[in-house]
Image 1 (cartoon, rainbow, N blue to C red):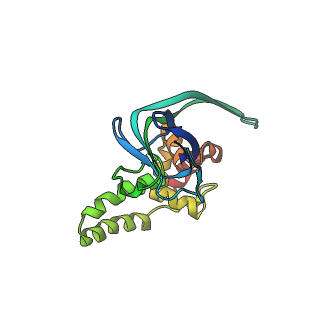
Image 2 (cartoon, rainbow, N blue to C red):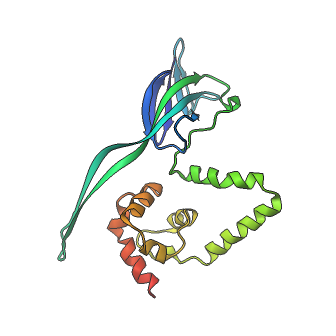
Image 3 (cartoon, one colour):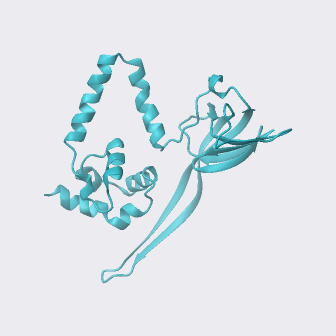
Length: 217
């Protein structure tokens, strides 16, 4: 039996025993995870999802957290004050081994779902876990500081290219002030570029320079 599954925005055709590299997952080596976005199952008969196959899943064991091959990014601006920059990037990946393909019963397997380490869903799940264990009153107290932080946040829409939707993502990621953005390192720029699906644009729009000016006002 084989399955076509989706994870990290990519599709993979897999069979039991296959080893593959996927976008980084929020899991440690040795953990078992379950991919629930199954587009097709094949074998004696073929089942095509609409868009997903209900109840189907692919279970896998995490072998290691690795990095892909280095990609060189060269940027040159042809202006009066021209500039050029060379930057290398190695994509974070997770190496997994497929252990089982389930045609049904995925919701009752008890194996945790495979969630991307940098995805908004992954952040939401991590934040939701403590709230479930806490009493209802504790939930309200925990929400109060978050609301207060958002209320006192800088207007991030003043940055070039930032609209209401992108500002909301930044706030959810804990970025609430121009001072934070002004202090970003190259590693921070790379991290938030991936988180916001905004790769390369932070440098092009000049967020850090703009944030420094806005923070000083």
